[in-house]
Image (cartoon, rainbow, N blue to C red; front, side, top):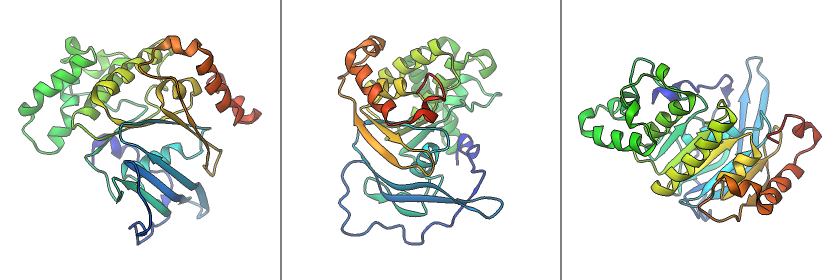
Length: 289
């Protein structure tokens, strides 16, 4: 298991997953990713059962960018971990390409809120880490690593250590590392949440450019409604725990997009629609909502 994934071990013990993980024969699977009737329960240290997710039904087409927004504790990250193969659902089905998700897959790469770079490795060594962990000859992958760093404007920083990079640069390295194995699906768990507003805006534009070039399917978790609308083809709005999908909203703003679209009436309309789904307690969390 990649080192960055080990840092995401759950703080609560999962309820034992169902023995039968095969989807029923009559489930018609369309699209690359499908959640059907998915539910997830945890057991706390005090033996209480906590329902984190319930009745999750969602299909994501290949090449689609789906963003997920909701209050803290609504199960956004749990949903992502199930898709990454780091958690098993308690009931229901989670499929990639019509196959049940039972473990981490090389088809799926994860970028976390923290860049989780190894401090004793340079930027290019961190990008090459997936090849090293697979026991492959690292020298065979140097050209690809250099190309990824060049694509993100980091060629001059390839031999720098994480402590010598800004937060935005560290996350670019993390994205390069995720793309190193050419995954089919990119999962991003609030990757820009710790960055300042200007850097976050820059990273959003950078991510859209990368996705346009590499044509990846992406599930992007965020607390920011504007970020969700700027990036997504669709926005999944989730309720407070237990997390349910309140609504899936199409973002019909065309592509390519830039920050100027955020001042358009269409952008404001989608943001307003999402905010209307949350009550005053949610909006009190701050300007992101």
